Each structure stands twice: as structure tokens, then as C-alpha cells.
Length: 162
Image 1 (tube, one colour):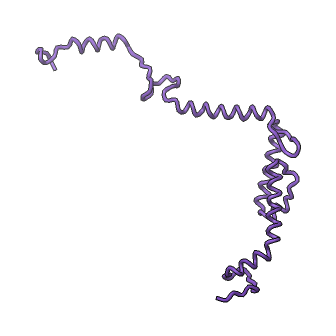
Image 2 (image 1 turned 90 degrees about the horizontal axis):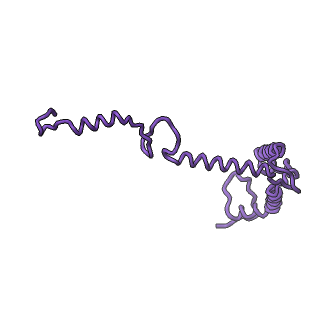
Image 3 (image 1 turned 135 degrees about the horizontal axis):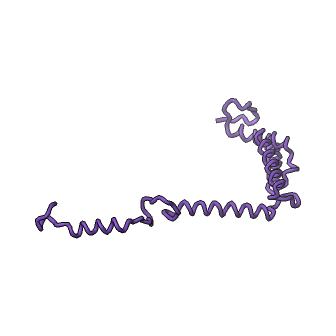
């Protein structure tokens, strides 16, 4: 099989390995630059430095959803900062003591909520449940009379009623 390495393809038809290699070589440096740019923006964002991200370039590379997501992230950080949960530190953000307490409170509340769900029969209620450690309300007089009737009822063997 003879390959025509110099032949260009428009992307609509089949291409052999040689065509693909040529296309990568031709567009490789551009693709490499684009990927380097994306990596640079992600590194800055991961350090909290999102103000210097070029939103137009981000949108060109990743689409309009990426721009919307970045805008939402900026709004979210602004809300947290106004509420006193985070503060700017250098190029990034850090939790304030208030933010740390809030996270701790929410975590403990969730833990206690799960523990309450898991403790079967260990809650106060006026109604008795089905199983577990039930508290019985016993009418002692009525119970004593029932025991007495059963104990002293003549059995069929003794000639009494059944």
C-alpha cells in the first residue's frame, strides 16, 4: 500500500496513519501552545489566583460554559468573603476562624444526624414502637387479676369448664 504523505485532508474522509501524522506535525506547535495556556490558567486557578485568568482565551479554548463557570466561581468567592468565611491572602484565599467554625458545626450536625438515624429505639416518644428497648405501661391491678384468673381457673382435667 502506497501512502501519499504530502496529501492534505479536509477531515471529512478517511485518513491513514501518515495523514494523521502530518496533521499532528502541522498543528502540533499550535496545539502545544494552546495546551500550555490551559495548563497555565489551571495552575493559577488552583492557587486561588482567578482574577488574572483571561476569560476570553478560556472561552475560546473550553467554550462558553467555562466562562460561565468561572463567573459563578467568582460570585461564590465574593459571597463567602462578604459573609466573613474567607479572606484574600496573597493571590489566593484562606478560611477565617468563622469559616472554620462553620465547617465544623456543619460536620458535627451531619454526624449527629446520622447517629440519631442509626440509634434504633433510643429516642423519647409517648408511643411504643416495634422492637428495641420498649417501655411497657402496665396496669398492675389488671395484670394481677388476669394472672389470678389463669392460675385458679379449674382445668378440664379437674372437671371444670374449658
